[in-house]
Image (tube, rainbow, N blue to C red; front, side, top):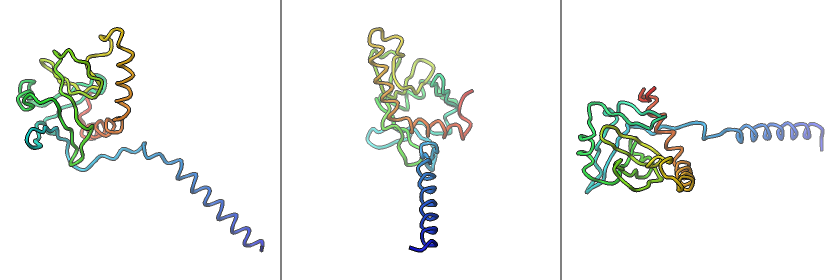
Length: 172
């Protein structure tokens, strides 16, 4: 083989190696792609129907998980939901989180997955209900289950929060 061929082959191999390293170091998880469209919260009784829209959401507090609405009372929200047990969150045509259980704070059940929680005056979107510190000896088992379930929907949480952040709806 000629020295020119070997030199070109080595240069080509070096370039391929650098490109491979560059491509492997890219992490798609670092970039959040927000679907086209607006956020809507829907219910399904006989048909898919929007019950809460983006314009009605005032803010979401990442720390407390409280979801605040413009000009809507809990009674208004309960009336729109109409005794259903699940909600569907969409951005545009893309469904987020599968389905979300509706939980009243008077419930004595344990929910270890994403829940839309309503008390007499506030709404929350949290990874479970009730708070883990109220579960006594079952706290650790439920904590592990909630963490596993939360990990499964982490990307959707990230998209939801980024969507709200871009619209100035993250509470400070």
